[in-house]
Image (cartoon, rainbow, N blue to C red):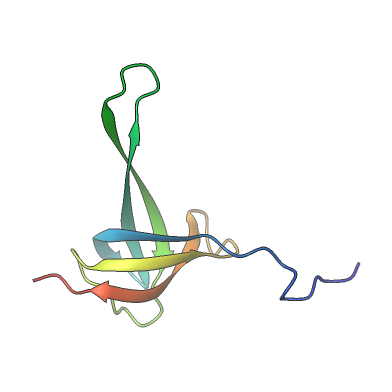
Length: 90
């Protein structure tokens, strides 16, 4: 079976979120918040989800705003990796 060329492969998902934990070795937990309108009541509802991301250089700290990218499974729960730290926490 032939591999697809990199330019024909679909783009990987990226998300921006806040680091809520960095206690693990080379792993961070990122909380992704999103808002959407309720289909019936037309009110704005906030949804959040947490995902684990690989942080090779341990660059992210708690409260930092980071960008993560989807990748192959790295462990049981890790399917994302850190691309960059957008904003450091005060």
